[in-house]
Amino acid sequence: MVGTAGAARLPDDPPLPAGLDELSRRVLEFELSWTGRDGAKASAIRVEFGVTPARYYQMLSAVLDSPAALRHDPLLVRRLQRVQDARAAARASRTFRIDPQDPTP
Image (tube, rainbow, N blue to C red; front, side, top):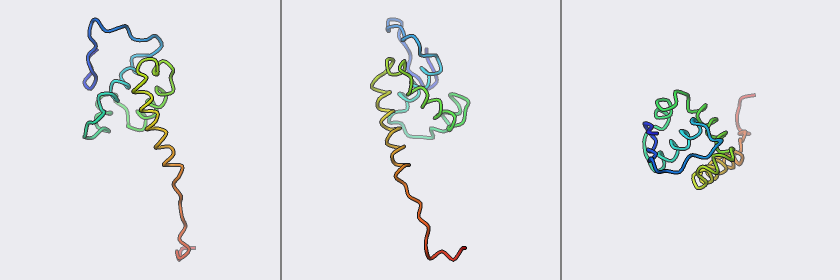
């Protein structure tokens, strides 16, 4: 398969693992091809998948939770899971402070 952002599969490549659907493979290929690239990822997501970035990241999260995805590309999936976990930890550690000098009641 050759996608606009994905890598081509060669005829002698091993068959894809069962259980990983075409959309999940496309999401993983997109993430793999995006590594180290600069540019507007949100625009590329809209062009490649026809969804908003928020919906794409929901799809990516579901793919990363799939055992089939882990079997398909363990290094990529584990790296993306680490990134996802680091972002979740950063969000959880944020604190919201109320300024005691704020004159608003």
